[in-house]
Image (cartoon, rainbow, N blue to C red; front, side, top):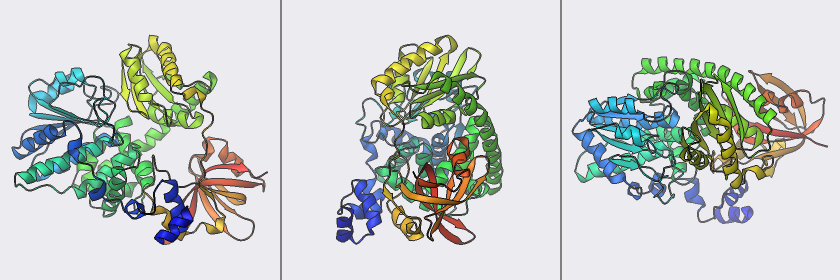
Length: 556
């Protein structure tokens, strides 16, 4: 079918094979390869409460009311807050930014903070949180509250002027793939529409797409539908280097090529998250919103330092959690670990490591006294957020919620075992206990000489690649490793060839944390099948093909 599409469209066969696997027809190919907001942006009013939410924002902006933004402490919350701050700037409105401390306050609005904000503000906008915060929103007496969120909603909504959330129980689910930054952007689209009907000027929205792209990728939202256009066009905006905070952060992360989804997910995102994990919670949002170059550089340097500290803390917790989970066994529907003093800021990352190692939903909990705060990560097809929400409703958890692939929870020490057992039962009913090792899906075979820059550029036309739309994975069969060297703390750099002439460089991140790194380092001249995804390495003006190695097996 790929060859037929190539003949019908004139596109390269390698690209057509990817399009066919994505379910794209020859007629759909041109639009798929050039995703635009004009074609893919949904009507914001298709989301419940969108019109009153945008109207309240417009009224507050045009009358210069006192506005507070209550944001989550992750990248999605930070980008969502920065979107609103940027949009309000032409109205000469500077909102109060409030980001809760992860350790002292936990996730989402709390009674004390909301009551305090209500005393001094006319409008509170909760971004990337608030859908389940019935008590805290009720505490904001005398002030309107608007919620712009995407986390799984409950059977009832909190008392608010408007709750815009594609994952409300009464929504269709058509826009469930949006992250909070995407929801905020749609609200700003609707706000601009309402401003135009009144004949007033409208803030520029296209220049905000770098923030939407960053939030979408960092929150691991699936790159389908309008998310593809958000990220594709957002990367272009980011490449112009016009946002002081992202320029400073890109420089401190030593990004010397055009931004890609990899940079957003693995270089920029973790640094912005570091403030919320182990530092000052609002640092990431403030960096993204600032227009002061010197201030941006100082905040970027601090976030880079915090990210280094975060990695050190993460390593300690990860090693202990892996050992504990292994002792408990990896065959249960749920893999979990809990420890005294484990930093709440890294338990989510460690849960991801457990999930990747076992292909099971995973939860990691850090206790401080009798209360534990944890985070979970799920695998495709298993709704962890719903299971955690069910346990909270049954009283086994103090609180909990999230979405299908990621969720948070708070649990009392004396209910830990019962809560984990109940969660395991709920996940088993979804099929989590029947899963074997994760399959490594392969899209094709290549020899090293076929991996060229031209091929990669053709493949990238089908991007952006990420969650829900992975880049194609190739196997290079029966190859000889000619060079292998550990780089950094745990990465592996190598060169391999087909034994004839062509050679290809490869990088395997985190290889030395598992058996793969030592296996390849001590290859002893053996031949291997190598699997991974291709990208372009740029160094000193030279562009070359490179394999981002994911797995290998002896060629027997």
